[in-house]
Length: 400
Image (tube, rainbow, N blue to C red; front, side, top):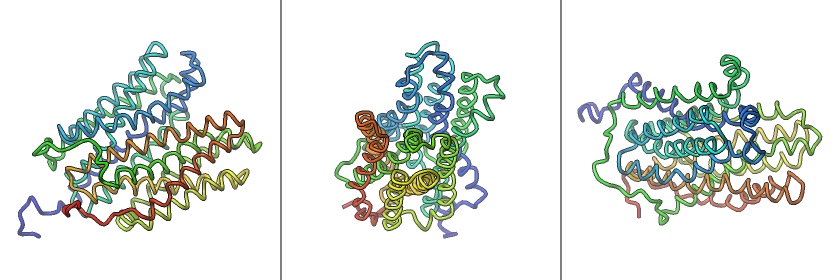
């Protein structure tokens, strides 16, 4: 209301734009540092003599760190606030990501990759925890969609323009390319302190460990594992799947459309977030469709398999946004970072381990489809959770 005082007056759209830009840029850096590794991996491997396992670890190690670093992120949010945590995490991410471009050997490369992943992991719960402090309640869904749009755009940007655009501008140096992608994040970290809409330190100490008594911690985490394991898993095994079908020459096109689908997912959610966020029926429908898409990728062949995989990527991207948008809507601002960190801990542990388990089975049987069948089996196992999520509690209501 207009007479409630300036502190309670919703800011005009012009004041929200800088906040939206900062959220989007921070979202971009949730993925660019991770997904520049695959296109650069052959060049890094040639210079440092990496084995196939270590080359793969350039991508898988940061994903594992996304789970391990979520709890330190939650602790930091409880002690110094979400904005300070986000800025600190971005500095840590830059130190690791840029450090990869300066390393002399394999050991330091892996250490730098782990540091980078740790920084990104701390960023993850800080962003949803920051939303209630920067945005009005009716803007929370849009805020989630904005930074997740940045994240999914970062996936495509990092994987899509590194080789054809950035490397040629830098004399085809993988080291310079890593520095060029990483260092601008320091400017974003500094700019986080420009908005005056956040009190940097919480007014009281809050709990930071996951609340396992809250069923949403495990339920959302398990569903995040569904979305993440299918996206990362099919991305990882796409080449093996197409090779088995005798369609390996389609791999570049398949990966292009597969990753571009994530961009379209984020654009759809920018439009639909306020209608879909917090709706259990939408989450259940998208989870079901994503499983059907993964099944189609396995049982079909050629372009039909690629189309089915691309559909899965599109729907899994929308599902991811809906899931990470839940905590700011259902718990208090003080509890948002804690719930988000717990769900990321569960979700990314599964996004790493389920495809890895599938890969072990595929190596044993010699059939890449078995890796995807493990992922599909896990997804079918946890799918009923999507139909029983309790999303009725809103901020400010008792958490009975």
